Image (cartoon, rainbow, N blue to C red; front, side, top):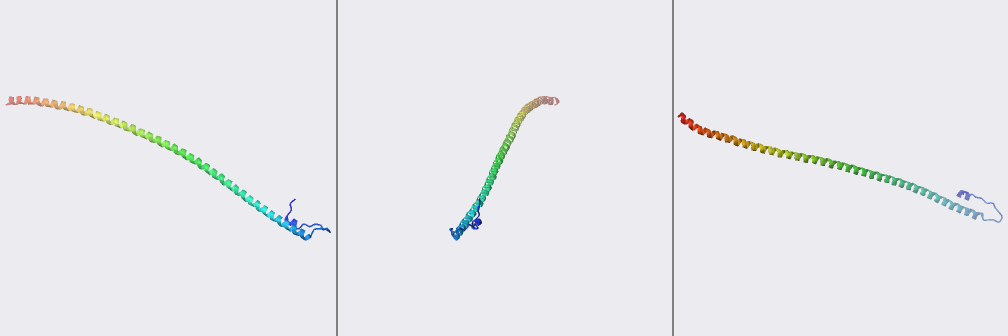
Length: 158
């Protein structure tokens, strides 16, 4: 059974011939009522404080959950970005390796072509020199024959 401070203050007792002092009883009841009122107010204040603390704890738990979720999301994003960067780096390296292989192969092919052209030019030069020497030799032979023939012809004419 709950009793309020107002009920304590307004409580009446039956009167007997040999009884208690009504003033003392009323003073005591007033004191008990005041003390009960104080206890009730303190209890209500503690309940309110407890409710506020529970709300605060709920807010902190909510914030903690949000922070944990944010950290987890950031970690996932970081891993994803890292994986994508590694894939891109591998693609770039692979592409660069392929391009360098093509450049080296083309350079080697070009060098082979230049060596072939030099070899062809040397053969052409050698053939030209041989043919030129043969032509010069043939002309010299003709000149010698002409020199032999001309004095005879000029003596015959004269």
